Image (cartoon, rainbow, N blue to C red; front, side, top):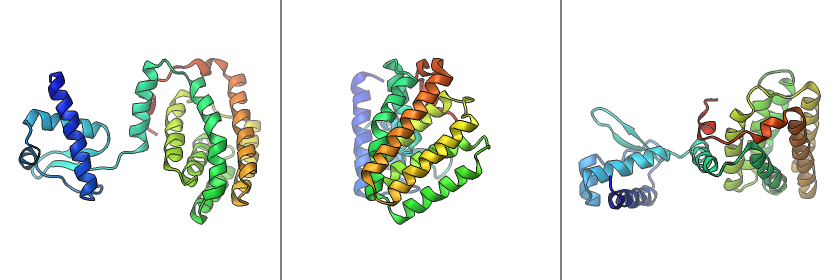
Amino acid sequence: MGRAKAKRALVLAREIVEDIESNARGPGDRLLHEDAMLARYDVARATLREALRFLELQGVIHLTKGRGGGPVVARPQTADFASSMALILQFMDADLQALLELREAIAPTVAARAAQMATAADLAALEGCLAQLERERESPQFEETNRRFHDLLGWASGNPTFGLLISALHLLTRSMSVGLGYSAQERDTQLRCLGRVLHAVRMRDVAGARRQMDRLIAGSTQYLAERSPELLAQKVRWGNANRET
């Protein structure tokens, strides 16, 4: 497809997204069949199919096959964002150190916002996650549940961009640190620190939540740097975000 046609396909993809939004279409809703879409948007078949493939790659729709098939509205997931982020970061030659520095910069602010905005449901989810983490002190699932606590805290901030970015960072760093694990001592440290963060959030102690999270993240980064310094230079790759969990 030439540049002009590719540009038209992108413009059409944006039009389709606008129509999905203006018509309050939700996940599972079917869009028009191909012939109806061709008439609706007055474009060539190749342009329409290119636009639909682009939207499918972005997680906006999925294309069903067979009789009665066609485009069905989906909901873009964190993994879609993480995949795009990883692709760009690969060309920027970014490494794990850069991701950890980003986490250090935003995690304390996320905790502080959660102390302001967390709902009763958010607090219940965080408390449940911490209790599960206590039970998994010696389990291989400890690291994954630890990440989930931070994800929940991000979404508890009341700012969806924080939740999205924290969760995306975890999708990227998960596959870059497979097999690293925490020592028994570090797990105990993590549990104590997370408990202090949660207490501050529960008490609506904004400054305390920021301070406790800052200590937790700084200590975690130091632990990683001392235990496996070569890991920090590992480059971000597009496939990092595509790993099955």
